Structures are given as structure tokens and as C-alpha cells.
Image (tube, rainbow, N blue to C red; front, side):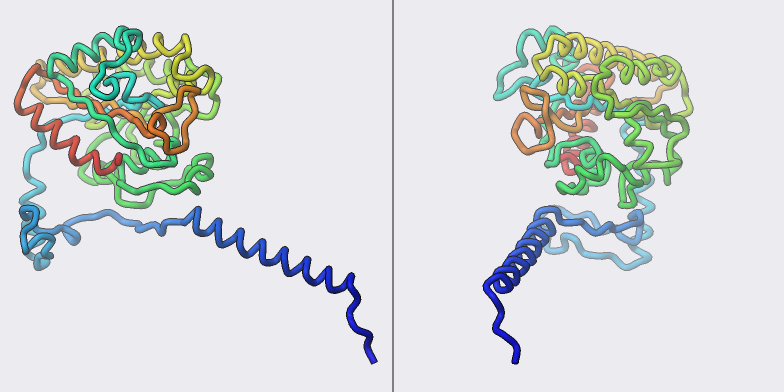
Length: 342
């Protein structure tokens, strides 16, 4: 006849059961806190097109018959674009507050004086600036995905940020490529990993050597004169990392911040004046879009959901002062791209 279990055996059994319950609870928490969004691969086209209707209409969102959908899609696709070329300048980690101010107050004197040309563009009506709300996690890879695809990232993307994979979801860059745009990328190599094989020319730099605040940006700017003189691209992406690195080293009030803002202002001035010359020579119009992927705290940190971290910049710059067509075009773009940034 077997003897009853001893106290030690009961204690061991209870301990094992408690550990298993703890593992189960932790697993459920991780699955709930780090949900993995299923990837919907493929690009949208005529098959997913819906008839445009006025908001609130009873026919809003009505799906057309296949032949009607294809016909209307072709008709809408033939509408001439407002701009012939697009320059996207990403200043990594730039809080909109440093350029646009906060709460109807202008930016501090030091930051405003560091970007005189940008402030001139805003005051003269050549530029329209917005505070764009970046959804957390406020790190580069998920923010770039959000800007080009509208996908909302999860905190698991923080881990994926260190091993970026190709973006398979519908996005603007792939759509531009499919309509024959020639694209050039200079700067953060995250773009190259997200969109392998799509760029006509590229020169990427690593974003993880945060002690470097000079060469990461010089590696972009050294190509800029040649690219601005070139006529073989439709989209030019410039991704500057130095300002974000300065934040990590010394915070947003670092003594290096104002000189870096002045450097970015000089790049905006060079690009804008080059676009004006290009328009005078060829008649083609260029839209310069200056954005940041996220902001930063006073200590230079980012990744969370505080106001300082989600306060990112969306600055649309045209070529003429007070031009109604440019104003209308940039406002329309702001409404559309705002859905990707928010």
C-alpha cells in the first residue's frame, strides 16, 4: 500500500503549478500587449477603387461594377498632378515645436534664429507647417512605415526596428515605382531595407551609431548638388540623422542643437532655390516636404507617447509666394498625408 504524499511533495507540486500559471499569465499579457498585426500583402489598384461621393451620402462607399470601376479608375488616374517632382526631407527626431512653436506661441528666439530661411518661408506664405501627431512607438522604422502606408505600429515593432524587413503592405513608395517614378534615397538605410530594389540610386548610413552627429549628415549632403542638378528622378528622399543623435547625447537643449538646425535650414534653402531654378528652366514644379518621424523629450529620448515624443513636423514648401495653386495643393496633401502620420 502506497504512503500518502509528504509535505515536500505537496509543496513541490504547488510550486510547479504556480510557476506554470505564472508563465501562462505572462504569455497572455505579452500576446495582448504586443499584438502582431497580420500583413496584407499586395498593392491596391482598380479592383479596390470605390466611387467618390460627398460625405454623408447614402451612396458613400458604394462598390462599382468591375467595368465601371476600371473606367473611372483610368479617368481619375489621368488627372494631371499638381507637382512634377517631390523632395521628402526627413529630419530625424525634430520636434515641430522647435520650428512652429507651441500653443500659438512662436518658437524660442534661439531656435527661430537658427532657421532664418525656414521662418521666412513660413511668414511669406511659401510654406505651410503642421504639428503632426506620431502614433507610438515613436522610433524610426514603424514611423516610416506609418508615413508611407498608414499602418499603425505596435510596441513589438521596437524589436523589429533593429532588423528591418521589406514592407509588403500597400504603400506610396511601391505605388510610385509602379507608375514609373524614378526614386533616389540618401540617408538612413532603413529606407533601403523597407524598399529593396526600388531606388535608382541610394547611399545609406546606419542609424545606430548615435555618437556620430556629423558624418551621418555629410554623407547625405555630399550628393545633394549632383542630385539637384539631375533631371532623371521624380522622388528624392533625404533622411538626416544628426539631430536625433544630438538629442541622444545632450537633449534638445544641447549646445549642438542650434548649429544643427542651422545646417538643416541651409539644406532647405539650397533645395528650395534649386527647385526654383529647375522650374524656371523646365517649367516643372517641385514640392518640398520637410517632415520628422517623431519628436524627443528634453533629455533627447523617444519611443513613448508623451507630447514631446509624438510632436513631429509636417512642412509643405512651394516655390511661389501666395500662389493659390500651391496653397491648395499643399493643403490637399496635408489632409491626405495626415492620415498616414496620425
